[in-house]
Each structure stands twice: as C-alpha cells, then as structure tokens.
Length: 162
Image 1 (tube, helix red, strand yellow):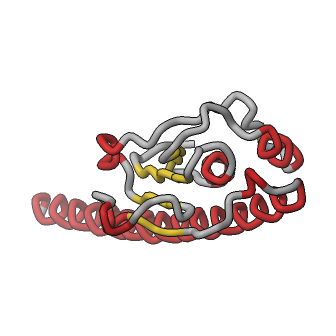
Image 2: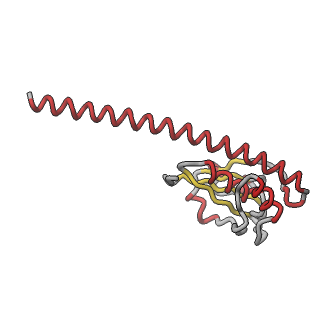
Image 3: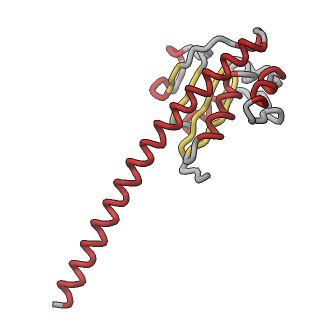
C-alpha cells in the first residue's frame, strides 16, 4: 500500500475496543491512507473480547496497545473520527471531527461486541470507498493533465521543426 500522507485518527474513551477495531478495519481496506487510534482515557490494554471478535473476521489486534490522545499531533490527521468520546465544543480540530456515536461494547457481552464490530466494519468500508472514489477522480484528472501536457509538448516540437 502506498501512503500519500492522508491519515485518519479514530478516538474512543479507552482505546480498547471501538477505535482499535476501526483502525484495524480501515488499515485493511484503505489503499492510499492510514489510520491510527487513541483514547481520551486509555485503559492500558486492548479488550480481550475485542481481540477475539476481530480474530473471528481475520484481523489480529492482539499486539496493539492502548494509546493516549496526543493533541499536539492533531495536525497530522485529515479526519478525526470519535465514537462520542470528545467534547466537540472544546476540541481544537472541530473542522475535521466526525462523530460515530456507537455504544461502548467493552462492558457488554460477546454479542454486543460483535454487533459493534460489524457496524464499525460497515462504517470503515464506507469511508474507504469514499476515499477510493476521490482518489479515482484525482487520478483521472492527473491523467488528463498529463495527456494535455504531452500534446502541448508535441505541438511545440512540431512548430519548432517547421
């Protein structure tokens, strides 16, 4: 995968379930961007049930760590997606903040964890598909520009020969 610098930050309270799942799904789907995750009050570990339900869909988050939200790094991210864990009115990057208000499955049962996992998968797929659409438009625009430049260079060379 090529990284063109586009980055998404997924934030939940503990960085133990939702944001970890979103980071894993997004990074498995996206081609030209990457995701990271963080927590407003990191728990220090990834929830073992989250690890288990992600393993069920072929993604291993067992080696991940729960990380704190570092406000000094916000400029690195094109989009910050919160699971309802950020007070929008005081957040410094409100213009790039998107809310996915899903309940915290960390205190629920396995079925709740699977349900939230599946919703996060759907949302991250939509986000990755939107980005691919934008990438395709940019690639087409770049190709048209390159073709126009090639044609202009060919015409200039023909005029110089004449």
